[in-house]
Image (cartoon, rainbow, N blue to C red; front, side, top):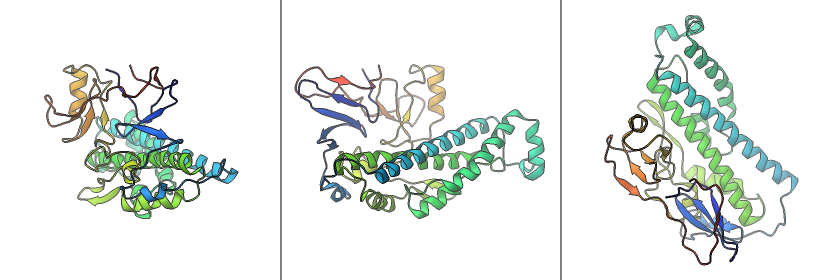
Length: 309
């Protein structure tokens, strides 16, 4: 059975109908933008369409800046996850990892040397990242979430999840902005609309082990641009952002079991058949959503872009 990726589109040449795979659903595209559920909290922001024929140079610059910020946030997340991957085989947070002594010991350990290089790269970049897509409080918590050799592995894992969530929020902002442009033909009002969402759906909260990612409503659901996927949950391991185990090997294989073992209990993941499952134990994890079937629409000849065989 084919699997579908977030943002994948399909067109029917015989009817001109267009659909897009958003949040686990095929969403009809109407007039260049998705249909709006007027009962959603933020639906009012999409209630009227503008008439500007094209974006001004300033608006184009604004969008480019948002895309650039999302790409930088994604790179930060990749670096943080690389750090955590190395941290799985290298102990950190000990007395030998602090100050000048830690710098010297890192020289003799290739993994720690790479981790220290990542740490040095992340620290200044994190201080400049996050603004625009997040609330002021989230920005402060995000910028303080830098992985470090002087912190224990468990703390670094939590911090990496924060960096991941920040990158996703940046990417969501770009996706929202593109949807706004399709509907409004302008970027005017987009920042204010997004800020209303960011303030109503904060990313982070203080936990016993430091900053942690909280549950939140996916932006498409909040703005009424797709039917709820379920639970109103957000963050990695939720239905709106499941772990992808489709390439981890066949079910029952050692690589697949190893990948499963790394998931936190209760996390949602996509198996090799495209089903969404909830992780509770090594085997027999319940299916909570079957793989999406091909869209049923009138006409023939649907052309899919980016289909995963």
